[in-house]
Image (tube, rainbow over all chains, first blue to last red):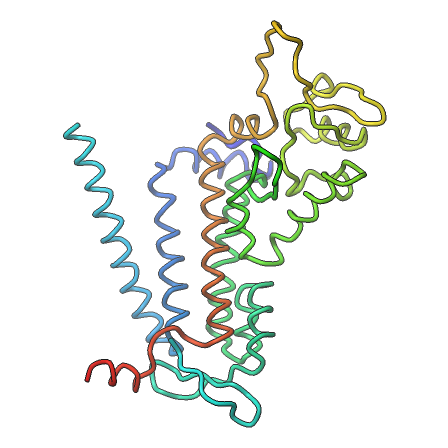
Amino acid sequence: MMPSMMPSILTLPVAAAIDRVPGLAFGLPLILVAAIVFAVTHHEDREAIRRAALQWVGWLCGILGGVLVAVWLLGWLA
Amino acid sequence: MGKLEPPNQGRLVAVSPDDGSAIDLKNPLLAAILSWLVPGLGQIYQGRTFKGVLVMATLVTTFLAGMWLGGGRVVYASWKPGEKRWAFICQAGIGAAAIPAMIQSWQLEGSGRQPLACSSFMAPPLSRGQPVSPAYAEALIHDGSGLDADDFRPSPPWRQFRPFPPPGSLDTRPADQLSLWHKQLGRFFEIGTLYTMLAGMLNILSVYDAWAGPMHPAPDARDEEAS
């Protein structure tokens, strides 16, 4: 469904494109955001923040990917 | 957790987990409040500019993206019976950006029965039979939110939003404004809510960082744990 209440200046080209994006894809930016904030609040050094953010992305994708696979398997077996 | 050391010339310091250097927290309470009001501002005040700017860019962008995806409707405060907006507790973590929602809620529930400037921005949805001021009813009818004059019944000195239909009559319209928003926005209502909730919750970590320093153990603490 087109998000009809979005600001009109963005409604036509952007919202129409966003409307075709699978729901799962909206979680990916949130993983990146969480990883950055986790890294920033655990380190001071720029390089350490960068390394920690990448590690957190790996952990979060691994855990959430595992949950996704488990749910998919349960759905497939049911 | 960054180790808080005894006051050093009247100031609290934390220890960097990366190189063991001291981090001047200045006034931690003020930094925490600033960081709550605007994500990252507390760190900038403490001179930790890179962290502050990174947190600010990340969380403010996430919050605004959520607001946009949710059509500007997903951040509101409502504590009416049967329509409590629990998500707002998480959204309020973003600070100043969520304060208008509280003001709009108080105004709409107050004696004037209308949000500030009759604007529906961050105003809670109307429930069936809720009285509002005639000016706010007119504003809703004309702002393209999907409501029309039939949705309000005169009930001097107010206008009543979609009063309960007489028994036995069939009313096919959505029961309240929240149902209308869900119908208009579809999945984007939940996605926008999720984005804004996550931004608010992650800002709590940033507030803690401004108050007490990094959460990672300092090098000497890690060495002690290892031994």
